[in-house]
Length: 134
Image 1 (spheres, rainbow, N blue to C red):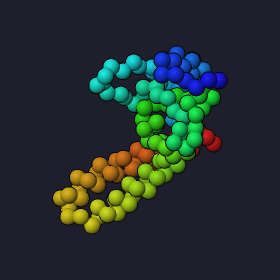
Image 2: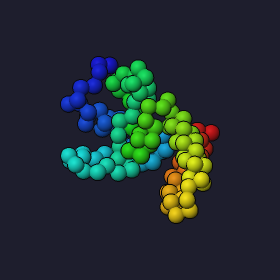
Image 3: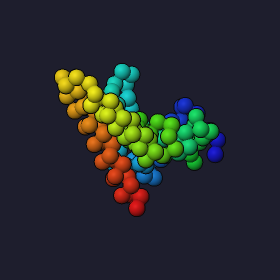
Image 4: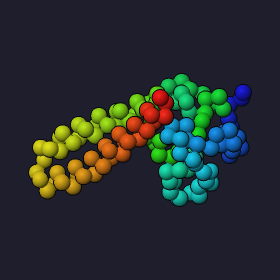
């Protein structure tokens, strides 16, 4: 299959969406949205996801593409899988929690609340993905 040209993006996204409208990683039902410049994307917006990221040698070809929700695509980054990315995010967040324990109490309370919330979200998502794979 030839590489995807930028003008073919919408047709390709609709073809892949017709095969499976759910996020490749979390299974959430997505929607196709045409973003206007400056508009904000949201969590259930369908985005292209390269199974093997281009930075790791993956090609821009339909055989290497699935759709993922905006949230999962952003969390995965260039990790091989979303689970790998979430484990790295969880480790980094836990290290931040450990560092914040040493901060003055007023700074600690604000920052810890935010970091612990993200940590819980990432652990919950990792658990749900792991359960789906089992």
